[in-house]
Image (cartoon, rainbow, N blue to C red; front, side, top):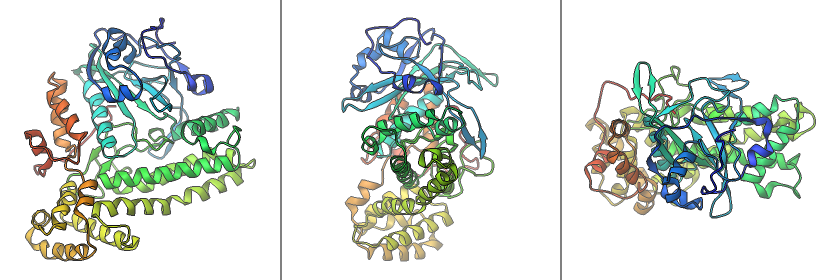
Length: 498
């Protein structure tokens, strides 16, 4: 068990997961951080959790955030799950360097997980279990970015430097731990693992927990979610994933590693390792260094999320009917609804991005958006700049849009603008849907490099900017974020560091 001593000065937690699902939990023992130091602390998030940020900055708070001291009521565990990685089933994966410290009721009364990563090896480790400053700060930054864009996401509560260096491929880097929160950390792979166990009650208890945490109104008189209740829960998960994926597509976000152990039934985005945002629009773009065949490319995210839902449905099937074959048919029918739900959600996202009123027909929105994306793909046009420039075009100034394209293409772009303008787009809607500030990949790398070297000022400034993405700012860093990135011969590449 983590931490031999409970520190009563720490905020009280609950141990819902550890008590409810011991079969999906393993005790852990983290290694003390020799010199813990807060690199960044999410004060607003701490207050949402009813925690005084000053407590987290204290010595006891730093030991808590690095997993070496227990909070009252907590029972820290590594979570056990399976998963399909690159299409292949791995019967056991689990938290290899992380622990669920426990749950905390936020100011609204809802339970939120507090989870730490980079604490050292667990019984399921595939690596040494430690993490470094750069990837942990990346998780903090991009979680705040998606949150500010209105997309459900895990969020980092803090990044703590441990004072223990980590050597990777002959390079020594400063160690760090990230503490993050989520509505829950129930992964598709959690259900996949539970479905392999002989004790069928584990699957039912896991579904019970999902109902209680995410869909309390779906529980029937407090009974386990059998029959229609389980069907309703899976239906809600599918709808939530459709919305989540459509949000990624509108934001130009590429997750990079959508294996079933990296997606949550809550619809929150998790694991910000090889992710990135689109600059020049390319539907087939891949940023991950290990995705050599484009499995998780930008345009393939909807199809891979549907594939993942099919695997979840298979694991869910015994909750849907006594006969497994019948349960799989029911699950398949529910997952089939993803295509229509995703289309509706995608149209809603791009309706907003185009600034079009609800009165404009969905098919017209869809055709107009696809025509725009075809032009962007043909000319590798800057994705965020194009959408933001439409606000000026809606007021009659087309120059910002036209200058994004080479002169031979501008006649066709003018024709598209004519068709779009006839739909009477609203500049206010456009400004509300299309951010000014996007975490440009080259800028993210620059500020993370500076942070690893000890200068956190650019990182702090970037965090402040991405938290206010729809406002124009006049600073050197803001101007760099709003400019089209320099054209380089070397593609941007991300790595699985988180």
